[in-house]
Length: 243
Image 1 (cartoon, helix red, strand yellow):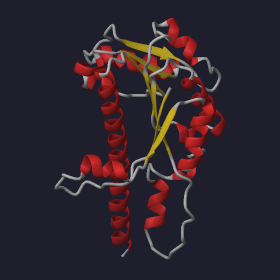
Image 2 (cartoon, helix red, strand yellow):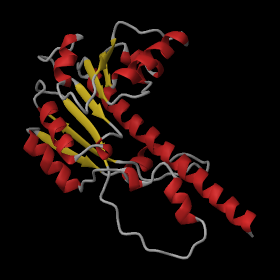
Image 3 (cartoon, helix red, strand yellow):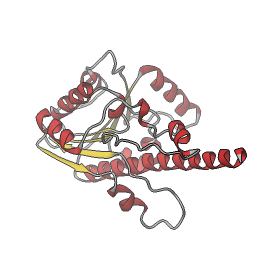
Protein backbone atom coordinates (compact mmCIF):
# COMPACT_ATOMS: atom_id res chain seq x y z
CA UNK A 1 0.00 0.00 0.00
CA UNK A 2 2.83 2.41 0.80
CA UNK A 3 4.36 1.90 -2.67
CA UNK A 4 0.96 2.41 -4.32
CA UNK A 5 0.36 5.72 -2.53
CA UNK A 6 3.88 6.86 -3.38
CA UNK A 7 3.28 6.03 -7.05
CA UNK A 8 0.02 7.98 -7.13
CA UNK A 9 1.74 10.93 -5.50
CA UNK A 10 4.51 10.79 -8.10
CA UNK A 11 2.02 10.65 -10.98
CA UNK A 12 0.13 13.63 -9.60
CA UNK A 13 3.37 15.54 -9.17
CA UNK A 14 4.42 14.80 -12.78
CA UNK A 15 1.01 15.92 -14.02
CA UNK A 16 1.28 19.13 -11.98
CA UNK A 17 4.72 19.89 -13.37
CA UNK A 18 3.53 19.21 -16.93
CA UNK A 19 0.49 21.42 -16.41
CA UNK A 20 2.67 24.18 -14.97
CA UNK A 21 4.98 24.08 -17.97
CA UNK A 22 2.02 24.02 -20.32
CA UNK A 23 0.82 27.25 -18.72
CA UNK A 24 4.23 28.84 -19.36
CA UNK A 25 4.10 27.82 -23.02
CA UNK A 26 0.59 29.24 -23.37
CA UNK A 27 1.47 32.63 -21.94
CA UNK A 28 4.63 32.81 -24.09
CA UNK A 29 2.61 32.02 -27.21
CA UNK A 30 0.08 34.73 -26.38
CA UNK A 31 2.78 37.37 -25.90
CA UNK A 32 4.64 36.34 -29.04
CA UNK A 33 1.43 36.56 -31.08
CA UNK A 34 0.93 40.05 -29.66
CA UNK A 35 4.50 41.05 -30.52
CA UNK A 36 4.10 39.73 -34.07
CA UNK A 37 0.84 41.62 -34.49
CA UNK A 38 2.37 44.88 -33.28
CA UNK A 39 5.47 44.40 -35.45
CA UNK A 40 3.17 44.02 -38.46
CA UNK A 41 1.72 47.41 -37.52
CA UNK A 42 5.14 49.03 -37.48
CA UNK A 43 6.17 48.80 -33.81
CA UNK A 44 9.90 48.23 -33.76
CA UNK A 45 10.83 47.80 -30.09
CA UNK A 46 10.21 44.93 -27.69
CA UNK A 47 11.10 45.05 -23.98
CA UNK A 48 11.04 41.94 -21.77
CA UNK A 49 10.99 42.74 -18.06
CA UNK A 50 12.41 39.88 -15.99
CA UNK A 51 13.55 38.12 -19.16
CA UNK A 52 15.28 35.21 -17.43
CA UNK A 53 15.96 32.46 -19.98
CA UNK A 54 13.44 33.76 -22.50
CA UNK A 55 14.38 32.32 -25.89
CA UNK A 56 12.18 34.36 -28.25
CA UNK A 57 15.22 35.88 -29.96
CA UNK A 58 16.68 32.43 -30.67
CA UNK A 59 13.44 30.61 -31.56
CA UNK A 60 11.80 33.29 -33.68
CA UNK A 61 14.64 35.24 -35.35
CA UNK A 62 12.45 35.96 -38.38
CA UNK A 63 10.28 38.12 -36.11
CA UNK A 64 12.81 39.21 -33.50
CA UNK A 65 15.16 40.38 -36.23
CA UNK A 66 12.57 42.98 -37.24
CA UNK A 67 12.68 44.50 -33.76
CA UNK A 68 15.12 46.05 -31.35
CA UNK A 69 14.70 43.60 -28.48
CA UNK A 70 15.67 44.58 -24.93
CA UNK A 71 15.96 41.91 -22.23
CA UNK A 72 15.88 43.41 -18.72
CA UNK A 73 17.04 41.22 -15.84
CA UNK A 74 19.53 40.85 -13.00
CA UNK A 75 23.19 41.39 -13.94
CA UNK A 76 24.48 37.99 -12.82
CA UNK A 77 21.77 36.02 -14.59
CA UNK A 78 22.25 38.02 -17.78
CA UNK A 79 26.00 37.52 -17.86
CA UNK A 80 25.53 33.76 -17.47
CA UNK A 81 22.97 33.74 -20.27
CA UNK A 82 25.21 35.81 -22.53
CA UNK A 83 28.07 33.37 -22.09
CA UNK A 84 25.87 30.33 -22.73
CA UNK A 85 24.47 31.83 -25.94
CA UNK A 86 28.00 32.40 -27.17
CA UNK A 87 29.12 28.92 -26.15
CA UNK A 88 26.15 27.32 -27.92
CA UNK A 89 26.83 29.20 -31.13
CA UNK A 90 23.87 31.58 -31.09
CA UNK A 91 25.92 34.68 -30.44
CA UNK A 92 24.41 38.08 -29.61
CA UNK A 93 22.87 39.73 -32.69
CA UNK A 94 23.00 43.51 -33.00
CA UNK A 95 19.25 43.81 -32.44
CA UNK A 96 19.35 41.96 -29.08
CA UNK A 97 20.24 44.15 -26.12
CA UNK A 98 20.89 42.95 -22.56
CA UNK A 99 19.87 45.49 -19.92
CA UNK A 100 21.23 44.50 -16.48
CA UNK A 101 18.99 45.84 -13.72
CA UNK A 102 18.50 44.67 -10.15
CA UNK A 103 14.84 45.55 -9.59
CA UNK A 104 15.21 45.21 -5.82
CA UNK A 105 17.61 48.15 -5.56
CA UNK A 106 17.19 50.01 -8.84
CA UNK A 107 13.85 51.17 -10.24
CA UNK A 108 15.32 53.24 -13.08
CA UNK A 109 15.09 50.53 -15.72
CA UNK A 110 13.82 53.07 -18.25
CA UNK A 111 17.10 54.99 -17.97
CA UNK A 112 19.09 51.81 -18.53
CA UNK A 113 17.04 51.06 -21.66
CA UNK A 114 17.88 54.42 -23.17
CA UNK A 115 21.60 53.90 -22.52
CA UNK A 116 21.63 50.80 -24.76
CA UNK A 117 19.59 52.34 -27.57
CA UNK A 118 15.91 52.34 -26.61
CA UNK A 119 14.06 55.20 -28.34
CA UNK A 120 11.58 56.75 -25.88
CA UNK A 121 9.89 58.66 -28.72
CA UNK A 122 8.82 55.45 -30.48
CA UNK A 123 6.18 52.95 -29.31
CA UNK A 124 7.15 49.56 -27.95
CA UNK A 125 5.71 46.28 -26.76
CA UNK A 126 6.59 45.58 -23.12
CA UNK A 127 6.02 42.16 -21.55
CA UNK A 128 6.20 41.05 -17.94
CA UNK A 129 5.17 37.41 -17.49
CA UNK A 130 5.53 35.30 -14.38
CA UNK A 131 6.80 38.27 -12.38
CA UNK A 132 3.94 40.15 -10.66
CA UNK A 133 3.19 37.35 -8.22
CA UNK A 134 6.72 37.45 -6.79
CA UNK A 135 6.87 41.18 -6.01
CA UNK A 136 4.79 43.52 -3.88
CA UNK A 137 1.64 45.21 -5.10
CA UNK A 138 3.45 48.53 -4.71
CA UNK A 139 6.14 47.33 -7.11
CA UNK A 140 3.51 46.22 -9.62
CA UNK A 141 1.79 49.61 -9.43
CA UNK A 142 5.16 51.32 -9.93
CA UNK A 143 5.88 49.27 -13.03
CA UNK A 144 2.45 50.07 -14.47
CA UNK A 145 3.02 53.79 -13.95
CA UNK A 146 6.45 53.61 -15.56
CA UNK A 147 5.26 51.72 -18.64
CA UNK A 148 2.22 53.99 -19.01
CA UNK A 149 4.58 56.92 -19.72
CA UNK A 150 5.98 55.25 -22.85
CA UNK A 151 5.21 56.70 -26.28
CA UNK A 152 1.61 56.65 -27.48
CA UNK A 153 0.80 53.36 -29.16
CA UNK A 154 2.87 51.22 -26.78
CA UNK A 155 1.40 47.96 -25.51
CA UNK A 156 1.98 46.31 -22.14
CA UNK A 157 1.22 42.64 -21.47
CA UNK A 158 1.48 41.35 -17.91
CA UNK A 159 0.39 38.15 -16.23
CA UNK A 160 -1.04 37.98 -12.73
CA UNK A 161 -2.63 35.47 -10.38
CA UNK A 162 -6.13 35.53 -8.93
CA UNK A 163 -6.50 35.53 -5.14
CA UNK A 164 -6.36 31.90 -3.97
CA UNK A 165 -9.63 30.26 -3.03
CA UNK A 166 -9.97 28.57 0.37
CA UNK A 167 -8.91 24.93 0.11
CA UNK A 168 -11.16 22.32 1.67
CA UNK A 169 -9.24 19.84 3.77
CA UNK A 170 -9.78 16.22 2.87
CA UNK A 171 -8.41 12.90 4.02
CA UNK A 172 -6.92 12.08 0.63
CA UNK A 173 -3.58 10.36 1.10
CA UNK A 174 -1.34 11.91 -1.52
CA UNK A 175 -2.78 14.96 -3.20
CA UNK A 176 -2.05 17.59 -0.55
CA UNK A 177 1.63 16.72 -0.20
CA UNK A 178 2.10 16.67 -3.96
CA UNK A 179 0.45 20.07 -4.32
CA UNK A 180 2.90 21.51 -1.80
CA UNK A 181 5.80 20.29 -3.92
CA UNK A 182 4.42 21.26 -7.33
CA UNK A 183 5.90 24.35 -9.01
CA UNK A 184 2.45 25.95 -9.15
CA UNK A 185 2.17 26.02 -5.36
CA UNK A 186 0.99 29.46 -4.28
CA UNK A 187 2.67 29.38 -0.88
CA UNK A 188 5.70 31.19 -2.26
CA UNK A 189 3.73 33.87 -4.10
CA UNK A 190 3.45 37.42 -2.77
CA UNK A 191 0.80 39.31 -4.73
CA UNK A 192 -2.61 38.42 -6.10
CA UNK A 193 -5.12 40.58 -7.97
CA UNK A 194 -8.73 40.31 -8.98
CA UNK A 195 -9.32 41.31 -12.62
CA UNK A 196 -11.23 44.39 -11.46
CA UNK A 197 -8.39 45.43 -9.15
CA UNK A 198 -5.81 45.02 -11.91
CA UNK A 199 -7.86 47.02 -14.42
CA UNK A 200 -8.32 49.83 -11.90
CA UNK A 201 -4.57 49.91 -11.22
CA UNK A 202 -3.81 50.08 -14.93
CA UNK A 203 -6.29 52.90 -15.51
CA UNK A 204 -4.96 54.84 -12.53
CA UNK A 205 -1.43 54.37 -13.87
CA UNK A 206 -2.44 56.26 -17.01
CA UNK A 207 -3.13 53.67 -19.71
CA UNK A 208 -5.72 54.73 -22.29
CA UNK A 209 -7.14 51.27 -22.94
CA UNK A 210 -7.05 48.23 -20.68
CA UNK A 211 -8.45 44.74 -21.00
CA UNK A 212 -8.38 41.52 -19.02
CA UNK A 213 -7.96 38.15 -20.72
CA UNK A 214 -9.06 35.28 -18.52
CA UNK A 215 -6.57 32.48 -18.12
CA UNK A 216 -9.33 29.94 -18.71
CA UNK A 217 -9.73 31.10 -22.31
CA UNK A 218 -6.12 30.67 -23.38
CA UNK A 219 -5.91 26.84 -23.32
CA UNK A 220 -9.01 26.74 -25.51
CA UNK A 221 -7.39 29.15 -27.94
CA UNK A 222 -4.11 27.27 -28.25
CA UNK A 223 -4.72 23.66 -27.22
CA UNK A 224 -8.25 22.81 -28.36
CA UNK A 225 -7.09 20.85 -31.41
CA UNK A 226 -4.66 18.60 -29.55
CA UNK A 227 -5.48 14.89 -29.49
CA UNK A 228 -3.03 13.83 -26.77
CA UNK A 229 -3.35 13.86 -22.99
CA UNK A 230 -1.39 17.07 -22.41
CA UNK A 231 -2.88 18.78 -19.32
CA UNK A 232 -4.74 22.00 -20.20
CA UNK A 233 -4.78 24.02 -16.97
CA UNK A 234 -5.86 27.62 -16.77
CA UNK A 235 -3.01 29.91 -17.69
CA UNK A 236 -2.20 32.99 -15.65
CA UNK A 237 -4.57 35.91 -15.99
CA UNK A 238 -3.45 38.49 -18.53
CA UNK A 239 -3.57 42.27 -18.55
CA UNK A 240 -3.14 43.98 -21.92
CA UNK A 241 -2.93 47.78 -21.76
CA UNK A 242 -2.08 50.44 -24.33
CA UNK A 243 -0.82 53.98 -23.98
